[in-house]
Length: 607
Image (cartoon, rainbow, N blue to C red):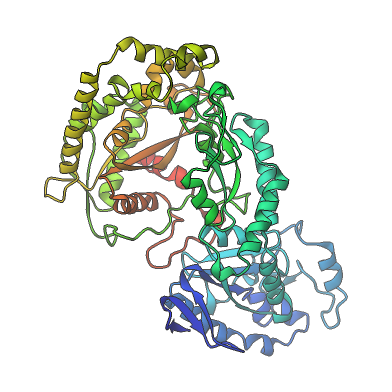
């Protein structure tokens, strides 16, 4: 294996009938069943009369290929065929076929040999031979049959790492190896979409308020077939090929209604928004339009006539807004039971990034008086976040929070919110009052009652310009500047009932640390930073469930890559299964994985 003339992003193998070139970033090595039971004397293969010397001849070539792929830093996957100790996952035909086979003395799967029970998980003979032992970070997939895809999570793990090409090596060319190759070529879009719709339909029973419009299963399958026909050559497929996506119902799609969750404003779109057209042009498959706070005016998700989507973590708590339906539809992220979902591991984003992990970055945080808005538990978790950032190279710098605090207040306390009414005719509010959500009416009435003048609007624009300049200075490269500002994403997590009791105040408080990014045209990203028991939030015992805590990273305008790199490093520090810089892949034993969601809070509670 060597770098090809196509550049370091491609590798080439001197194959027959012609050399084969493939993209290294999307290629993995799959090593099939190099187990002691198949390759060592007294193992299963030897006991049933297999030609062991012929089988053992594959070890050295596989070793050479494995070493080359490790040197090239390709993701490495290993498979092991085997069964549960009670053989509950072993097909009866396997036992019936093995026992009477010629030369095996009646031995079959589960019988005991010198290395333990044959092909039973956890036994010494079931594991991979020492010469090819998986390294930390390489993936091991246990399978109950010949093919590596049937009844395993292999396809999910490949998709999660954007793998499109496989190098396959191992034992039993005529059996397990060929079965796996055939299965790999059979993985299709229609199977993916059917599974996706089953999951959506099940979740609708739990929370029917996520979708405003959902495409029919038949329409989506037709779209999937059209995408496959348009790009039959895998090498020419665009980056979003076959990826299902939803659209917030404030974004236009030609031929579809845009409601903004406000019936009197519903209209049929004649043209599609550029963002939709770009996704479709890159191979995306449209699934439907999601619920939202009416007119996009809200941060709780409790202001829609289509219903209130609740948190996926606890049905009594808000999902947040205004993109409430969108967040619920994707928040689950990695689901070990769903082999088509993608794990919440940050993509590799190294363009314009801060450099190797040993390199430092500067960060600032709001002052104590600004953090007083947080629930005490949130303050406690955020303090641990600060220590975690320092441990990965962060240098905490003093920060003038004033321009960010004042800019955030401009959004709702100043004249900017008047823009909500400026988009409509003067009599629009009175004509449509009876159709609007009561909280939206209250917000609009308060805006009208202010009787804002042009002078006030210009003063707010001048203030915005001043705060923007000050923010730019803080994000400058000078010694006193910072690369990012780190805050809690929200100061607390309220129940739906609490928000409905005080909708305007609670809504505004949710943006305590996030409003400034909107007003000042900054870039920002929120990263999950753990789950905490509901008992700790409420200060009482006996409450079931856990809720998420998030951290916001806010950076200067157009500094997205640098911001995402720092956020990635923080996210990786919480996740022992995340890709490392050297190998580019995660831990191989899912039974020993700890959830990133649990890691930070566990560390905090052990200090």
